[in-house]
Image (cartoon, rainbow, N blue to C red; front, side):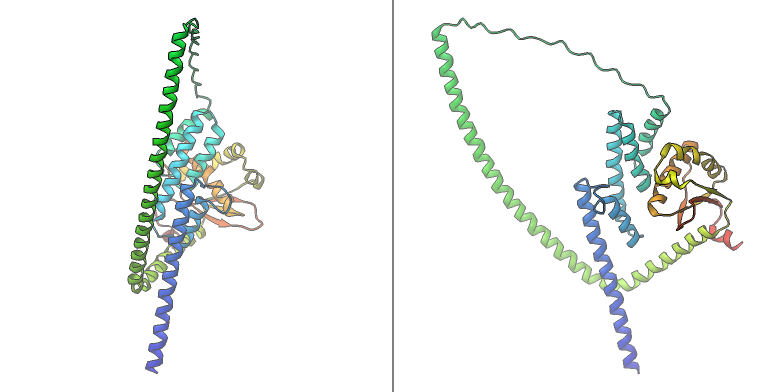
Length: 337
């Protein structure tokens, strides 16, 4: 009986370690794909093959892995730069679309708030168009005197022939230098490939050595995940301060101006009560879009207020927003009371 128990325990431990190692391998592969998307500027397109979608996927399978943070803020910085360029080119609608992606993904990205301030001034009608610089006068070059003597023409022709020969020699030198550079580049590429292979072997060895510790790490992750789920469940089931229904047509059509008017009184209540919110929407995409609209709406009332939000999916019901007790007291404590 003891032998049977030890065998079962050993098989269970091996299964746990194997599952943990597989999860880490998937995370590493997904990070590599995200890096490739960022380098290729596949940030939000094409569909099902872009950096932002893979970042959300990574967060769902490894919510406590901090390695994703640097990628998130790298994407945020790229979009802030694109927004600033669009603002300079007076393409304000495109600039806001860029900033919407940053508000949804990484609202602490440096430069985001200053870029949004520029757009807010434009949308409020306070932007001043820059005057175009005066055109520079065109200078018309005078034609050279064509009345040179025949001797001067012959000297010019000889000089041109000499210049052509020198040009041919220079082109030959450039071709030789290019060939030498290409050979050096090939050598460096081969050396870099070997270095990467060596590094990959080193990393795989490190993973094998760390496999014995994965069981404890997995247990810690499951415990932290259970605590997070409990907190979110408590937040979503706490008694709401108020409920506000929304128009699904505005959400389906992504009507930013009309939804801004509908959200204004709700945002004022959120700020006044320092409330957290639960967004009841039919899809995750609706939830993310509505979260950006709420974030901007609240920000216009109080820039220092940070919106705390969670999601509850509803199948056929009308979308709504419920306000819950604020941050000064634990939501779990409020639920128990």
